Amino acid sequence: MKTYLVGGAVRDKLLGLDIKDKDWVVVGATPEVLLKKKYQQVGKNFPVFLHPKSNEEYALARVEKKNGAGHTGFKTIFSPNISLEQDLQRRDLTINAIAQDIDGKVIDPFNGVKDLKNRVLKHVSSAFSEDPLRILRVARFAASLAHLGFIVSKDTIRIMSMMVKNRELMYLSKERIWNETKKALNTANPHIFFKVLKACEALYVIFPEIDRTINSNFSFFNINLKNYFSNLLIILAKISKNTDDISIRFSSIFSLLNNIIFFKDFSSYKDFDYNSAILTKKMCERFKVPKYIQDFSVLISGFFLFLRNFHLQTERKIIDFFNRMDVWRKPNRIKQLIILIKHGFFFSNFNKCSNIDFCIFLSKYLKKIFNISLNVSVQSIIKKGVLGSKISIELELLRISKIKKWKKKNFKKYFY
Image (tube, rainbow, N blue to C red; front, side):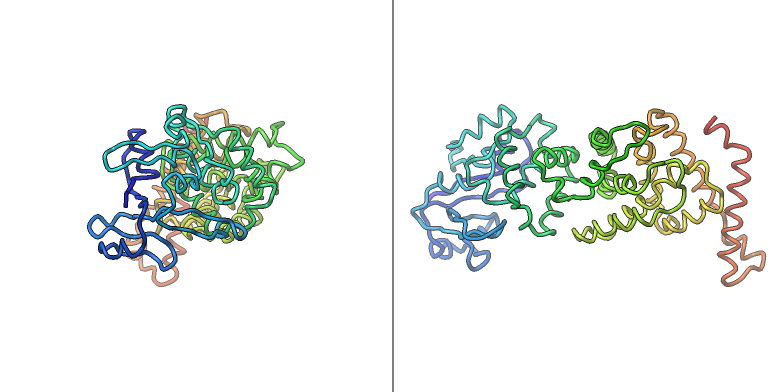
């Protein structure tokens, strides 16, 4: 019986990154041997065990044979006769198919160390094409390792494209897709995830909303929408450098796209757009996106054009907007909006988008208007003898009055 450290722990150690989890492969053993050593088996039919002291995962060396469709269509075979190399061969990328023995010696049958040095993500073998989840995993690895200069090899992109054409992605559950997307959105460079999916044509299968946008027959301000998607990725990259809030990141890649489908003139529509909001909601529900992300994204979709023209809105509409956004109970949403506005999300390559000063002024303006509204005292209304349901009515009227009074004195210095 021999044990080897494998996978991400070896990869991250060789890259000089922090090791999060350690996974081990056991060669030359049976379940009975590990159980006698007090290892705890995880699952009945899968040869993975927890170490009695470290609680780290130890898996018996195994191979997999395709016997069905999709990510779960495999039969797992394990025995003492399966070698370390056979086990490593079933893995997705060469950089994840490196092992290390207990003496620290590196075992690298598929040149993963070389690919680490060359900063390339490359599939281990033709068996890669048997698991459609690997398309998303490779895109996610590309996002998580982009800061080190990693790119996906052309041969691997070609295999991924072939898998897409063979409709392998149709067998992935929506939960699996969202799980990988969520992990990608939590990396430092989530835009790379979408870029890789687009390169292998998987983006259009998974997120048809994007396909509908890019292939629309109209354009805005003489801007080609196919080029606009690239620009949207730039915005996502920029926003991601300034916040790790997944709600903001998710909204910045999807909310505007839905508006493009329904409108040809971004300057003509100023109220809540139910068409775009419903489309965003349906997409979120399809992937079972967490409610806190879904709610924010739907609101941003619906209010996209309103926020684009926020400086032109009446005091009444502003208060209605604040109520709809539920900012009195969730003031953090104002901070989220400010990040999106400041980095040009609502103006990207359209009209005022090149004027970064305008975006900064608009973000400050939104913050100021909100603070004025927030600082209106409810107690001062109650002291006047206003009671019951009339309190909220009076509160809104007072907020409108305060905003109007401030705007009369200060509006020009923000935008002129």
